Image (cartoon, one colour):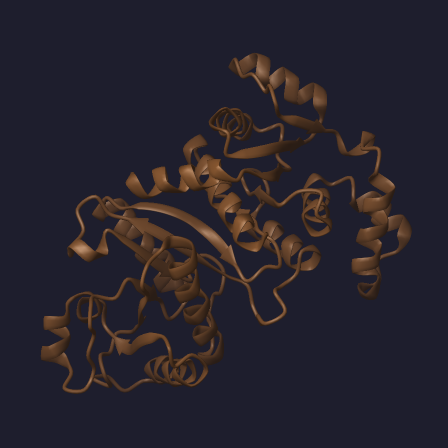
Length: 333
């Protein structure tokens, strides 16, 4: 995958410190070993040291250059507990509760990220998505100018339907279940920025629907049209079309037949799905039947990078997400 080779090279040029709170998972350990060998990140593992060492022996892994922290033995744990208390006291957390909660590796990892002990965190091989996202929102927080945290996938095609579509961005396929028009507009704007700044695309944004240019009348279509108008008011620099069906979004000739007023200079390379149901099914159809490689989900809108894995993830998946997290950290620092 040429794109991912480029990501590896970019990460290697300026490695960042990434903390992995699921240090006793064999896949995470193998990914930590590989990432360290490639020189794309400084890795800290959180977990029971004895269990980590036993897992390494069992699977023939060597963690030279990887730091291991057992939360209960961490020398600065009280400082981290105080930071957790400071962040959550307004929600009723006591100092005693903070001292207990900080022993959870996911919580400690996000406090590390917030306070700059590390540059980013990756979890989800063991923790659920809801745990990963909720913890990151509570402890790392949203960027000041963002109202929500969303996600995107980088879709890489070996046999694209158009030469310009070898790499695309799909959003939101993992987090926001039923966005309203304002949320959909925010997802589209931040995804376009991610496509430009992170992936290197010139974003052509399509707000997908089962309607093209008002061919169907329904409140779900109205939501997409409202989102389009919000985007044009907020970000007139963005090329955005919608409501639009998928075939018209990626084929200007089809769009010309379906719409007299809507035009695309080039096929859309940023596809914004109207809801999670469509987005999650859509990216998996493209991945499984279309042979695309999906990198993600990649969270966007947080103060510092934190990314979620699928509990069915492979070692390769973890390496990819760690690499992406390094690149996100590079864009902040």
